[in-house]
Image (tube, rainbow, N blue to C red; front, side, top):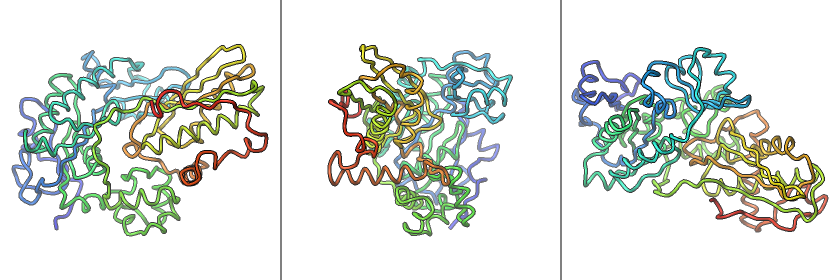
Length: 447
């Protein structure tokens, strides 16, 4: 079997120039050596049979849209971020990334790292550009699953018979996105969603990465453990100290051994992905906008000692529904209605997507503490900016308090499924009695 090395992800200068052509899209990259004409087709030892899943990811999307709109920004460190005291970076151009600026970084730190950067606030135009790009994808296949505003999975099995090979389709998509919108995208093609996303990540920016089915485990097992969705930086450090440096090392563990390192809730997930076991189909369905729960008290709650435990329970319910649907969210909103029926909302973007109730609660509680200046009649919490949880990864942060919360909430999910709603309640609620008269899930279960 051929040996994979990172060098095989790049073309020679001559092949690269051939691949660029008149559209100037970036090079194709393959997980294993191929024939000399590999800029145009998969070589004889890399059959494209069974690799029908594509992951398309815009390159620094928000920043790229700004540059396309104002070409004078080209080559400059463009940073799209919230500019308030709690603002975070939404996107950074590759020029800005050279200074250590990346998404989810607090804006204040980004300014220190890149003081000469061009800082811009997000605009609503990104959504319209996203819709137009997704429409391009749907011209090739109806099986398009957006997982965020700037990335999507495509099932190209049917399109293969009508249009051409997945590689040919990917090249065409990349050329059209560049020609019609002035921005670049990277495409990964493989047999599963997990592997397709790895292929695109390995090929950024402005690339096309292909992992043949026959060589996917060789490619996967040579990657560092950090490449697996769900392994955060702290977990990767802990696993490395245990001698588990590559995904192949991880794949040699059984579930029980893995659980001792990452916790029960994550062990089966990581065990499967380390073997590229990912049966999730591409689901051409609408990305849900938000998940919310709210409660009206029978008597106005005078202070946080009453409404605080209720807010925690609501946050857990929202997180449970998110996990059941396979979503994770980054936006948290708390809703408060006072005794005089005045209603206010406060919102915040988290540093990373989450499906953990405790993390949702902590953000909501901080906002509610500042906003609840009078007795509370109604309180609610909403999780939005939803994406597919498996696509963004669940960061297992060993040694931090939240490491245990996901396991605890997973047990609560199972208890609720077995014994019904109300089987698990917070100790605070049980101690003082239930003061609610109405608990509602506004709108649809995940509207």
